[in-house]
Amino acid sequence: MINNPKDIAEILEELDKITFEQLDKAIKNADKEYEQMQYDYQEEIYNIQSAITTIETNSYNTIESQQIEVSEISDMISVKENFISEEEGENKIWMKELVLVA
Amino acid sequence: MNEKTLEGYHATSKENIQTIIKNGFIESKANRGHWLGKGIYLFENLYYAIEWEIIGVIKHNITNYDEIKQKCGILIVDLDIDNYNIIDFSEPQGYAIFERLLQLIKANYSKEKYEDILNKGYTYIIKVLEDLEKQNNVKYISRYDIICAVYPKYFTKQKTHLPGDFIPCVQKQICIKNRKAIKNVYELEHSDMTKGIFDLIKNNRGEKND
Image 1 (cartoon, each protein chain N blue to C red):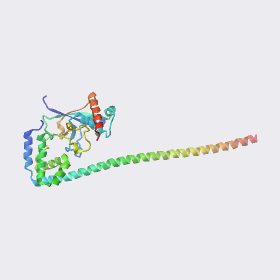
Image 2 (cartoon, helix red, strand yellow):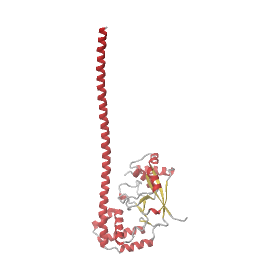
Image 3 (cartoon, each protein chain N blue to C red):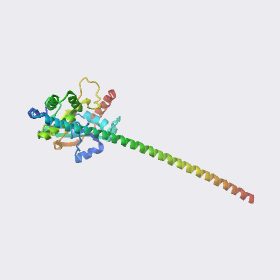
Image 4 (cartoon, helix red, strand yellow):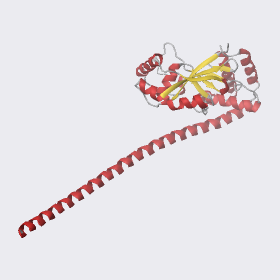
């Protein structure tokens, strides 16, 4: 047993002295604090949800930007391929001309 | 050395462990999870500290014990209850304080208001008591450095996950109001015992995972 009965009896005696006005004031203040606590709690939930949404949006944007980057690279590759094949074609014509000259 | 000591367990992330040992605890704000008001919260039973590691610290289920060892730790906190005042609300003498205040409320308010207050729970009643203390300059509960109470199961949906109600298992929490009551803080070494409790929790949560 942790509780000291004498101590508790003293507290109970003090509690009996509380008037309705004092109790009502305490309850009104506790109501206000409780409301604030509920509001803070809701705000905390909202903040966590916003953080989750931000993370989701960021990861979506990252994926999207990576996809854009990949498609840009792929465009560049196909442009280069076209350029190479054009260059190859020109080389072939040039080689043909050389053969003909010879 | 005949000082009486009460031992409590505090689960937290691995990085917080050394900070707490070095700099001490940071008091939790009074909110729904901190139902006994401002203070430092401990579990009296190691089982709940380990369960808190799983459901509270990491915020998701852990199936691997090695993962818990890497990410979480448990602090053992020794409290000096010889030189500091302690109250246990789960003992009839301690609960009498709540009972007396509730009787007073019941006698002065409508049934609806009384039930509304009951639904708001311990945190609300403690706030009423704290306010009355300020008004009357009487220490009803702030004379205590440590408050113990059984965590009401209905408080959140997060239950104890213990199967069955054959013999009710209680989760007692300790709220340190005065940090001077802390004698020692040290880290609990993970062992076969903690691993055994981890397996038991896993088993219990699997059987009744509500």
